[in-house]
Image (tube, rainbow, N blue to C red; front, top):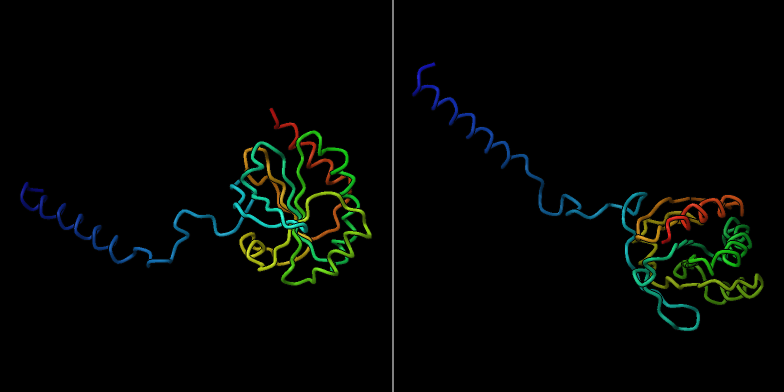
Length: 183
């Protein structure tokens, strides 16, 4: 090719490329803007603040440096009821080693009275949080109960378990693996 036609050809290619970029760009609001579409393994756990039964607030980000198990549950959920004793045993055995259990009651789909009765009957001593608006459940894209998130000390979700009940052995294995990451 001669120098002038070659320049024209290259300019035409660049203009076509620019036109393609403009035409094919994502519409505003059409992407996640760098945010993950749903909490998932390998990504940071979204921060939230919820109240306990006695009105104290718990913010997830303040638990950085600990292993956190977040369990979304409701008192009317049979698998939730079945796995709570196993969660309590794991809490009893590992809470002094850096495990924090956050049992998030789907209060927008449950009644406070039913949740309190359930908790009293099971003698549960781990932190129970109330998701009254359902906002945290939506943030975590919880569509079924129970749903459990295992979060490493650095705040990264290591595993998500949807459904249940989980056995005590399965809980222990996951928690022990995460506790090994503590300094």
